[in-house]
Amino acid sequence: MKYSLFFFFSFSVFGQLYSQLTMSQFNESGNLSEIEFEIDLDGRFVNKITNKPASGLFIYVASDEQLLIKILQIDSGVIDGPGVTYVDRELFSVMNMNNSKEEGDFLRFYNNGNLKSKERRSDGLKEGPYASYSTTGYVDTEGSVKNGELHGSVRSYYEDGSLLNTGNMQDGVPHGIFREFYQVDGKMKKEVYMMYGHAVPNSTKCWNEFGDEITCPEEKSHID
Image (cartoon, rainbow, N blue to C red):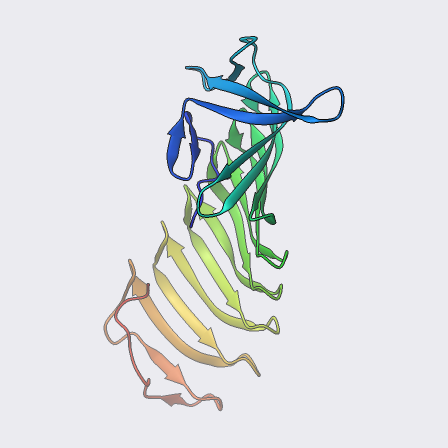
């Protein structure tokens, strides 16, 4: 199951919207106490009993198909500062919030604790450098994101760090020249020109490991 990690107001958990919810906070005795909050028209968390905006470190827990735990820093009713999400008690993501919107580095993790992806957020939107990693920790793909979509040059790698392929994305769609390389010596293996996700007819070229141009084994007209 996928989770929405952005805090749409009303509060979104497991695809459902909440105008009120219960969170826990450590009291003066060091024990967790549950507090009920409403979310006002300005998107602020307000204590239902005292009618005051929430402030401090809070823990939100939800259980549907999986156990979801969010640790949030709230200031004057808005989420502000670092936030951590756990799924089934395993670290899932680390982010920073500014006025209840994601800002700065956004990190996701595999169940084994290794980094899965690193991207930048600006005013709640994906924007800037992006990198994804394999479960064993090597860089799998790197590029840039614009308006929430991969945009510009992208590169992917073999497990040993050698270059696998290069290309260009336009608004999340392959557009431009894509090249694939042999792992051992980095020689060109394949080249194709993509136009808005489709291979231009007769643009695909292939080479063997000796650098000789050969007939391509197959040619796909579309890259998913």
